[in-house]
Amino acid sequence: MHFNEKSGYFSSMFSGSWRESGMDTIELEIPDQNIDIEALQVAFGSLYRDEVLINPSRVIALLAAASMLQLDGLIQQCGETMKETINAKTVCSYYNSAGTYGLDSLKKKCLEWLLNNLMTHQSVELLKELSINLMKQLISSSNLFVMQVEMDIYTALKKWMFLQLVPSWNGSLKQLLSEADSWFSKRRKDFEDGISFLETEQGYAFIPVFKYLRLQYIISDLASARIIERDSLIPADWLFSVYKQQWFAMLRAEQDNDVGPQEINKEELEANSMRCGRKLAKDGDYCWRWTGFNFGFDLLVTYTNRYIVFKRNTLNQPCSGSVSLQPRRNIAFRLRLASFHSSGKLICSRTAGYQLLTLEKDQEQVVMNLDSRLLVFPLYICCNFLYTSAEKRRENDGQ
Image 1 (cartoon, rainbow, N blue to C red):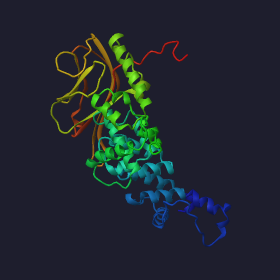
Image 2: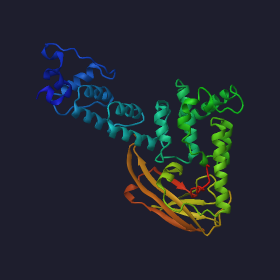
Image 3: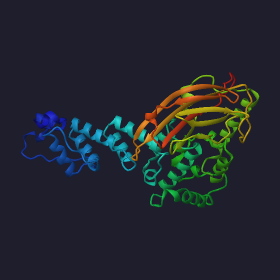
Image 4: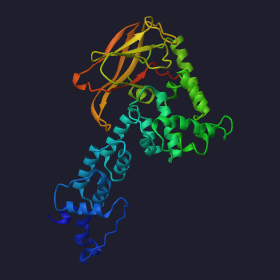
């Protein structure tokens, strides 16, 4: 087989359109710093045989060489190898390479891996490597697999921002939060009253990420609201508008008898739903609720005998906060379940699309019946919820 049948690069070189086509020796200009001699040797070797054994630790250099030489078959093979070897150590470099060399399906796979693993399997190394642009994509997504509640996303962002600013730090994940807290606390003394960290020179670059936090689900829990105020990372005017929005939502629920979402508005759900999750370490019976003020809707979630059940609690179980006694309340939700390999790769997953559920007082409803094949523990459950309907815009608003 001729070189130029496999490689667009050589095809153009030998077709006479290049000055070098009459020479005995050709010097190649290597414009890409990812390429080294070893990668070029393997790439040249692939011209003589169809299958190349790709070493995952060398795959980026080989992809770079294959891209320069326009070896489509080898490019594809590199992409497949990378998809199979995504883990905490490789995912960021693979994502960047996918962008550089136009491998869209690999880029998508890396993003999926990160959405699944950022919160479920946190690591110092990964938080260090995540760029502002990549973190923005993760935090803005309704597909982020959240563990516990939105406050935990804020906490992860605080740790991440600290590591971006102090990349030399190399303690353990256990020490990271207190270390980040004390670092930001020292900085607080240096700037004027009323100025948040994101409004300082050092913090400004992180605004595009933090603005995707769904603050309405953080300030609805007293302990979380106090931490947000104490940390002073987030601009006061962001918080002011959220407090105001939540106050009006509460008044509507109390005085206008807002019964919750009336229809599935995918856009509204993707942008504004409450993101929360839970890890079930082993099979058994579980019952829990996610903390925060949910406008008098006290939702109990039960996992038992391969069923997931939602119950609207009004009178039967003690709870903190007021409970709505409206005859019916609606909730829009989406439920996702997943089990992961130690590398973070999905073993199995199941998603039920967005649904609308009407519950009467103390009514319970099975929302998922699980196939036993799915039950690989630990089992991760992730939910998106919307408890209130969107505020109706009045005709004279904004005039």
